[in-house]
Amino acid sequence: MFKYFIILIFILCLIPAHALCATEANNTIKGVEDKETIESENGKWTGIDVSIVGKYAEKYGHPPRKPYINTDQGDLLLFVFTFFGLIGGIIIGYNFRKLFVEGKDKRN
Amino acid sequence: MRYLFRLEMFKMKKSTLILLIFISIITIPNFAFGMHITEGILPPKWAIFWFVMIMPFIVIGTLKLKKNKKEVPGFMPLVGLVGAAVFVFSCFPIPVIGLNGMATAHPAGTGMSAMLLGPFVSVVIAGIALFIQALFLAHGGLTTLGVNIFSMGVLGSFSGYFAFRLAQRMGMKLFWCGFAAGVVSDLFTYMGTSIGLGLLVLEGGEAFPIAIMNSAKAMLEIFVVFMTTSQGPLCVAEGIVVGFAISYIYKVRPSILQNLKVVKVS
Image 1: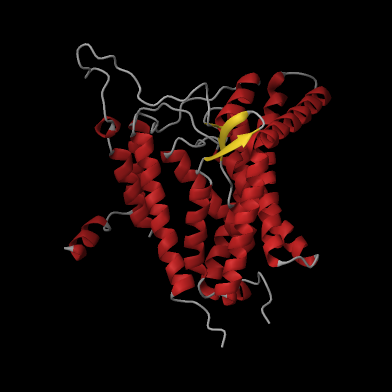
Image 2: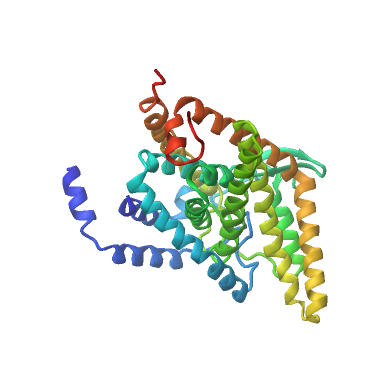
């Protein structure tokens, strides 16, 4: 299991971020403004970890820095969230079935 | 084909694989902000301090995991199920209408894992979940992994576990015992985050007693802000989910809870 996990991490680390983005900055169409299609309005639905933790960290003179692996590029973050959500869902479903469907206790 | 794949890929030593991962991590460019306590917020001495704080829990948790794996039937599938649930819970932004308007917040899930698997094993599970989130999901950070494990893993697990046991001793129904574990673990998780941030005030260069006072004030302020925005309603929601989860397990497979000494089944 550990080996599978390490190989999975390695493969994910090697995925080039630009290969997973839908658009590139220099690849614009003439006369069409390059603009984000989805925008959050004035920070609505911002995670409180970001808004509160970030705010206080800056107040105390330790602003957040960029993480060591950047997955927050275009659709890459969406990809990793979906990917790990899917993996998590499969693990939950598999073990749920094993424990509570196949291994259901018989009371009689 | 499958056999060949296994043969070639797994002939590599673990150390070689780990080295490959390390090289790929340091050669990848990096930007983005995350959640929990984000990368770069903690100065090196605090980062080391929190890592030292969590190490004993991780070691004991790993030993307990190995021991229970041999002794308790059905333990590993439960670890897989709960571990994946903790991972998904703790990076699942749930929209909540709080006092400051629209925001998202995420549950911790460690109350449930501590209640079922014990607090030490729950720390290990939280550690793995937070490590993957820090690596790939721009969620937390590698230098802040120690403080995040302390708040979500150590404080969340132990508070949830003791809340569950206390509720049991008070003779409450199983649902309400689970509810107490969920609510209390969530509260303590965010208290841990407040402590981690509040201690940064000690860096201000003021006299020690004044710095302590300011730090305590900051911790309280941050915790109140967390609770009055979105985390307050969310911890109640987490309590309800944990309550239903434990009730369901008791109904469908009480033998697991009996084997894990969570409840006594007559």
